[in-house]
Length: 285
Ligand code: COA
Ligand code: MG
Image (cartoon, rainbow, N blue to C red; front, top):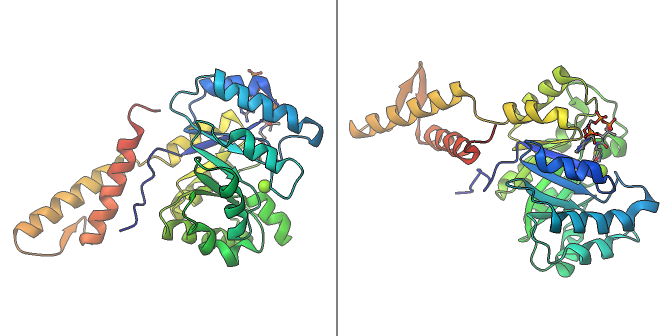
């Protein structure tokens, strides 16, 4: 069975521009589950080499605690991509995030340069939807970020709060990731002062099955942490379902009923995953 619970929590995945030293320092104190040290679109072309060196230095000198460390490199097609790969090839980090992955060979090319670090793929182009399953199947791939801003740009979609124009592509990427047991993270919510809109988008992503949300500002962390954690009600129900099913099994039955709804083995598996996700959080807020 495909394990659909990540090895660690990824509820809140905060981007930090790789050239911003103050933000790189501050991230070590923020309650996010993961940090993306960005060398790509948040860094101006003139700043690329400085950002690469700064991020490498910060990763060596700053203790980021239990936050997962992910470095987003520039695409290999750019003049910076190869040097980015080589700078982090042996780094002690959770993943290298490869932008604008449209075909499996984009991952393979980075895998050839980076022997030991797990790879994540940004899925954010119109064409990626057709190749998502083959990319997700790559043995070095551990995670996917659905880049909704680039995706909207590529499609020519307009922003809508319900993200209807993006849902087909988002779902294909999500399905591909889930089919291979990868971590799958939702795109960013641009209006970083709008908590109500952020919460609605987090709810939508959580409902769809995303493991967490990428964020652009520290003020977004609390909402993502809350929405992507199992709720107390979900945990109570999960425990009740497991207990009821065990009771039914003892009575020689394969089906139980909780709150007027049937509980089969598949519901028990889903309930166990909710409990496992809660256990991952430990004493995190
Ligand atoms: N990570 C860590 N710290 C951040 C941060 C981030 N992404 N964004 C802001 N901060 C810090 C600021 O450094 C500031 O810290 P200070 O109070 O210690 O000086 C504090 O949070 C408040 O910042 P604020 O003034 O509200 O934001 P801003 O106007 O300086 O910046 C953005 C707003 C959107 C430009 C900034 O949040 C940002 O660059 N976000 C990331 C963008 C990005 O990475 N995009 C690529 C992927 S889509
Ligand atoms: Mg992008």
